[in-house]
Image (cartoon, rainbow, N blue to C red):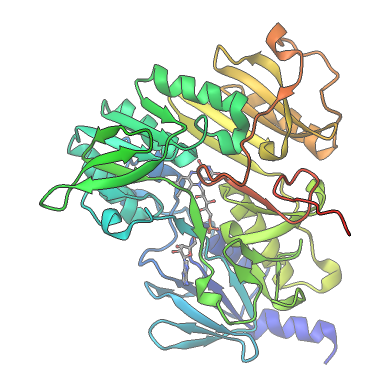
Amino acid sequence: MNADGWLERLRREGRIVVVGASLAGLRAAETLRDKGFAGSLTMIGDEPYEPYDRPPLSKQVLLGMSTADRTALPRRRALDATWRLGVPATGLDMAAKRVRLADGDEVPYDRLLIATGVRARPWPREAEAELDGVFVLRTRDDGAALARRLAEGPKRVFVIGAGFTGSEIASACRERGVAVTVAERGAAPLVGALGGVVGAVAGDLQRKHGVDLRCGVMVTSLEGDASGRVRAAHLSDGSTVETDVVVVSLGATRNTEWLAGSGLGAGPRGIACDAGCRAFDVRGIVTDDIFVAGDVARSPHALFGYQFLSLEHWGNAVSQARTAAHNMLSESTDRIPHMWVPAFWSSQFGVNIKSVGVPSLGTEIVISQGTLDDHRFIGVYGYQGRVIGAVAFDHARWLPFYQEQIETTAPFPPPFPTVDRRSDGQRPMDADFPDPSIPTHGPTVTLSGYSPADRRMTFTPAH
Ligand SMILES: Cc1cc2nc3c(=O)[nH]c(=O)nc-3n(C[C@H](O)[C@H](O)[C@H](O)COP(=O)(O)OP(=O)(O)OC[C@H]3O[C@@H](n4cnc5c(N)ncnc54)[C@H](O)[C@@H]3O)c2cc1C
């Protein structure tokens, strides 16, 4: 059969299976139907819920403005799919084209989309992680349980890790009038994602809002009382913080274990795929029937020197899902690359933070508008003489402009004058990112693959 006939048959009566029934999985499924896919569609998800939205879990839900069960993702269209919810996929047989499920079923596919995302990294000491009052925040159930505990009015919440999620949790606690301590191994909150210059502003914000912020320390252990409830956290500087709620916010682990031994190029860093979302196998050869999207994917980006980017960004999941779905139903010449310019938002301590590009790739920063002191500014990140990222604190309307600068590889430092650039922003400064080999909290962008900026690389002279 010629290629066109083969594709027509796939569109008419093919079997597409999506593993991971969340944001990326849902948006991909909708796009498949939009594009006229009329075959069978199976959505496999280990959570018992239909797709829901995660960002509100650390914002509106913790603030008590909404409840975790009201976070369902809006549907763009009817799907006509078979939903297998509450049952994890446990294996993949690439040769037989079948997904194995925990209940023993096997689901055959002609095209497979993997969108299994990430899960919260737990507190590493198991017995301590199981103490009553110790939480993580990734799922709807996590959000509901933590919101319930906050509503009971704890004496103090102790947050481990000051990345975006940890900082948002601390912010919600303060807004509710709950005392909160944040412990961060790095020098400042958000330092892994935005560097030390901007991290200092984030730290200032936290302290001004009454957070007891402890940076440069590690939590060494959690202590429970006789009834198994957490009562204190012990820190590497010898101090102890009495607390009745601990939120472990140490970043995320990619959900790839179920693919072990399958032959797919999947591991702790995610599932490697090409710019068209096709998964690589362990030999580095691209597959033609297995696609990847969302937080679990690791894909090369033309704008960033074809380095592999793993992004834990809502917008990336949506965009990559659409690209994957398009490519699943296309001939190779009609496929499109995933070219989304990374973008992220967060709201904390009354400030709207947004970023575009990859700030963490930047080595220098210029404050091009506003001032750090006012907590209202734009920081532009430079890498090898070009603009590579930008972050806005309460200045988001300018970000599309900087996105264009990134897309056109505009020179750094920006040569143009800006309306409200002040004297402290004239000169580029060291963006002050921590040594990436020292773990802080989970970054929302992980770079992998060769780059001169990859400070993990060491070159050994040939003998
Ligand atoms: C609290 C919180 C706040 C956030 N805030 C922001 C924000 O402000 N801005 C922003 O840009 N992003 C934010 N994010 C990130 C954003 O929610 C994610 O980027 C997005 O959810 C990624 O979607 P996904 O579909 O790729 O993965 P996920 O949403 O992680 O979904 C993957 C799904 O697959 C399931 N799964 C895993 N393994 C299996 C298996 N073996 N079989 C079947 N199913 C499986 C998982 O349980 C999950 O339901 C936030 C995330 C959290 C947790």
